Image (cartoon, rainbow, N blue to C red; front, side):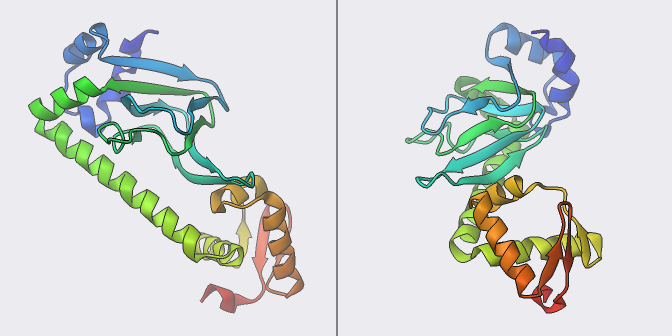
Length: 223
């Protein structure tokens, strides 16, 4: 793969702000940096696979998913270009991915070997600072998601999503861009469970909905 054409994307990441193209070329030539392509729906890391590199998504979209014993798929978060992953596990004693990482589109990932992460943290204060910030942010995302899962019923999760969209769209007639399957994965339930709860809310006169929209009929559920 011609890695040089990705230098601009790599340089746009705050981690590599102080690293020149010449340095990047040396790192690629020494095999301390590498690029890997993934196709849509390809699994990047399996649950319980050892984390050996600190990675940055250069192109595409990646989803972090958890599959429970009942077959429910819970989408923890999505990664977009510029996002990094593996940093909070690579130095852990138990350095195994707790969830699957799946390429939602064709994707390109920059792999940084553990030895290089240590080297850059020792030599480059900016890299160290950004690395710590990245690890902290990922910890907060995971903690918030776990808290949401433990405290919310399906209905509460639906209402929270409607509140969020209401604030964005400033309307009681909401355009819904996610499919029901994507929505179910986001809140960690099966699609039929989500559909049943939406039907109950419709029967109770709280909402009405079509394929791509939801109308909030009982406005008090938002407040």
